[in-house]
Length: 501
Image 1: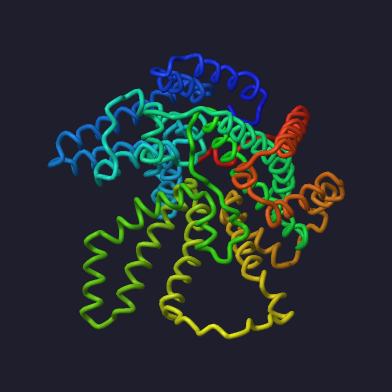
Image 2 (image 1 turned 120 degrees about the vertical axis):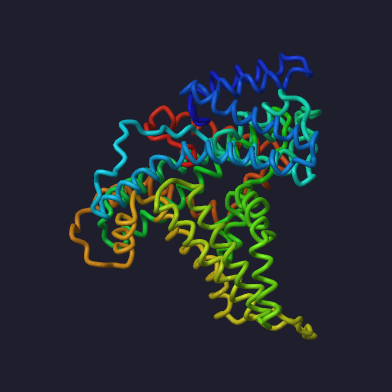
C-alpha cells in the first residue's frame, strides 16, 4: 500500500486516524501499533511475523543489557547476529547464490551450482526497520538510551506506519519521550496536513512523469547524446521528488499523530561537493551509518593500532589519512550493499566513496586554511568570478547524476552502455531516442522537467515552507493536493523507488 493511492488516502488513513484518536490516551501506542501492523501486512501478512521477531529479540536484548550490564556485549552480539542475519538472508540470498553459481561455472565445476527451485522474496522496508530497531540496542549498550520497559511502546516505535517502509530511519532517542507523552495541536495538525499534501504533489505531479521519461531512457540504453543526458536528468529529478516526497508525507503523518520526526532532506542538489551532498541526502541513513558504523570502525582495535604504528614511524599525516580511508571504503561498500543486492549498487557506493575519500585526502594535504586579515574595503567581485560561482553546485549535481546511472541500471553492462551514450559514442540506432523526444515535445512533460529544476534550485523546501503557515499557503497546498488526486485517476505509473530497500 503506497501513500499516494486512493486506497491509503481515502480508506486506510481515515480509518487509522479514527482508531487512534478514538482510543484513550493510555492505549494510543497500542492502537497505533495494531494499525501499523495491518498496514505492513496488507500485501503479505507473513511479513508481520518477521518484523515482530525482530522487535521481540531487540526489545529483550535491550532489557537484558539493562539488567546484566556485565554481559551486555553478548546481548549486543545476539541482537546483531539476529538482525543482520535476517536482513542478510532475505536481502542477499538470491544475490549470493547467483554469484556463487557464476563463479563455480567459470571455474569449470558447474555441478557445484546451487539448484534450488525457490527464490527469497524481499520484505518491504526490511532495511529501514532493521536499522531502526538495531540502533535502539546499540544506544542502550553505549548508555545513551535507557531500556524501554513496555513492549507495546517499543513495538509502536518499530512499526509506526508513517516511516515504516521507506524511512526516515528514526532513532529511539528521538522519539523516546514522545512515546510517553506527546501533544496534539492544531499547529501540528495543519503543518502535518501541509507536509502530506505537498509530499503527494511531489510524488504524483513531478516524480511520476519524470519517471516515465527515465524509464524510456534506460530501457533504450543506446541513445543519442542529448537524449541520454535528458534521461539521466529526468531520473535524478524522479528519485529526488519520489524519495523526498515520501519523507514529507511520512513527516506529515507523524505530526498528525503527535510525533515530530527529524528532517530527512536538505536540498541535496544545491551541495558544493559530494560529502556535503550526503549530509543533505537521506540524512537519517547518512547519520546512522556515520554514528553506528564509521565511528565504530575508527574505534576498532585494528584501526587504533594502525594509527599508532604510523605515528610512531613518523608518518603523522598518513596516520590520519590511511585509517580513515580504510574505514570509509568499508562504509561506502556497506552503503552500496544497503541500497540493493546487485553489483551496480556496490559500484554506486564505492563511486561516491571515492569522492568522499578524495575530499578527505585533499583537505589533509592542504591543511587547515589560515585566517586572512580582512581588508578595510570589500574586494570587488569580478564578473568572471560571478560566472564561476555556481560551478561547484553544477559539478556536484552532475557527479551525483552519474551515480544515479549506476543506481538505475539493471546491470554494470547496461550502465556502461548508458555512459557510452552520455559521452557521445556512436549510436547504433539513431531512432532510439524518438520516444523520449516525443515525450519532451509534449508541453506537459517538458514543463515538468523545467518545473523540477525551478523547484530544486530556487524554491524553499517543504520543511521551511510549512514552518509558518498562512491562509494563502494552505490554499496552495490544497490546490497541489487536488491536482495530484485528479492526476492519480489517469496515472498507471505510481511506484515508490525506495520501497524495495
